[in-house]
Length: 113
Length: 112
Image (cartoon, rainbow over all chains, first blue to last red; front, side, top):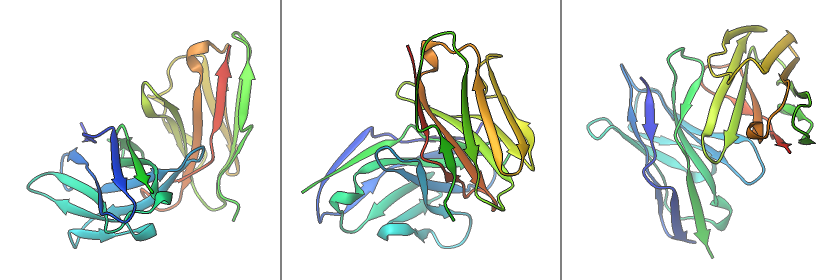
């Protein structure tokens, strides 16, 4: 079965420092990988995706993610964190039927001023 | 585009009452998804539709839950009778291209 894991419930980082939110996956076949963000009292928003091609994927709001096949990881990164990046981040893979998602449990990112 | 629209944004009801949640997807999107989010279980897919037809309802918790999509611009999720354990945030999402779902703001349901 398709699955993703986010090993950290909470990540704290100081404003201006680089941030990393971790995700590992287990899928059959070629992986399609996604990151979504949820700001307080809002629905999820698409950040970026990896389908094929370059291992470094650039997305919205200055975020990027690095696909590592040998480590089955797809970590989300940003060179310089902003307080406004504080939110809940979800890693996701397509489910068995292709159109739905299997979401990870989420990682709460807090960027401290 | 106004995005995915959900109503109501908040619903408080008593156990045993019927609850109806509403969703208007983005125009032109032919996939519609209903999710439930709780602290304990995270984000769960309940059901999704393609061209108004239910494709996968395996996530619907039990017979108390039902969902309909009578046309391309409207869907409902109904809980009858409601129970306290149904308290959650319910999200509707729609998509046109594969894997890029757009989520609504959610309906926060509290069943007392």
